[in-house]
Length: 237
Image (cartoon, rainbow, N blue to C red; front, side, top):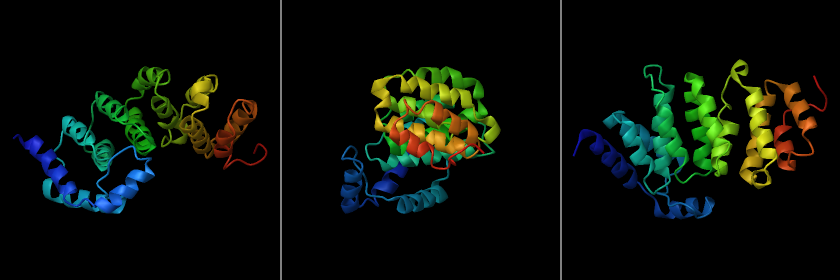
C-alpha cells in the first residue's frame, strides 16, 4: 500500500470509527433520503478533521480527494471539499489550471445543494479568480448542460468575487438564458439561485439589480424576485 492510499484509508477509518447510527437516520431524512450518512454533524466532523490533520498532515493528491469524495457516506464529500478548499485558499500553494477538472468531477457526482453551493462559490469561484481565462470555456458548457446543477454553478460561482471583479453582464446573460427555458425556469433550485445571485449582487450594485428586476419582473419567478429584492430599497438610490 502506497503512502497516498494509506492516507486515504486512514482518513476513512478515522471518520467511520466515530459514526453515529441514530444521527445518520435523521441526517438522511433531512436530505430527502437520497444519501447515506455517518451521522457526523458539522462541529463533530470539523473536530475529527482537525485531529486527523494534526496526526497525518495534508499529504494528499487530487486522486486522493476524488476517492474520498466518492465514498458513499455524504460526510466524505464535505471532507474532500474542505481539504480542497484549504489548498485553494493557501497562499503557499499554486494550483494548476487543470484543478478545475477535479472540481467539475465533484460537481457531477451525486450533486445536491449541500455540495454544489460550496463547490460553486469556494472551489470553482476561487479557481476562476486565479484563472479567469477559463471562465468562458467552462460556463459556456455548463449553462447549456441538461443538468440544472451545472447551470446553478454559473449563477453562483461569483458570489465571493469582489465588487470590481464581478462580471455583471455574464451573470445577467445566464439568468436571461434560463428565463426563456421553461424547464429550468420552473426548477426550484434555479429560481432560488437566481434570487440569491441577485441579492448578493445588490449589496454592491443596488441600482443595477433594481433595474434588472423591474425590467424582467414579468419573467422572473416570485421566489427569484423575493430573494433578489431582500436588500433593495423601493426606489433607485
